[in-house]
Image (cartoon, helix red, strand yellow):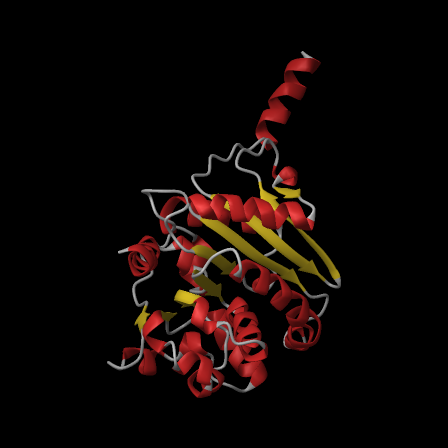
Length: 275
């Protein structure tokens, strides 16, 4: 009887992930860096990240990218989204709904965690993270002539700081900024974004509670709230208005996670990359 109970409990915490694509991660937590592969079949979510030596990490990506007919994908997550249960949910959505169905894609997740609260996390991004991150991006550019980029929330700001520090925009095939926490003024005045406007898709909405709070704290308009500008004909983007189909209660309420919880938004991102 005790054995049966233990077996039942074990089954309740086991989660098997069947992924179509190859997912890797680069993770900077404070000042510590690790990299590796996100397990294609994970028997427990604690084994989701499988560390690799740096040389093996890049060599594995190179071998798989040579077999792919699509650009390498780089995903920049938002604030506090490095926690495994949240990241695992996002990875599943990327794998099932956003990445292509016809062939395998190599996706590198840029994961990060600053031990500071908002808005001071931006200082850590610029002073601590960017020098290390751009070394990795330089290596990745050598493995794929073009990359598709997805930045969510504060991940869009991290991407922006990377481009400002080291312009690699010519390598970007297409870029999606979903609910970007990036300053609207910083985006529209940046020469890097201006010269690749035709390759960028911005998703914004009214009522994004997370960005509304961020705008109030920093006293600036966030790109993910700039719905009037996004509605203009010459601005690359989509305004998300209907949240009734969002699959997550928190997604409906906060209106911030829609890039992976809203079926129509996922389909539009997929079509932008691969349509």
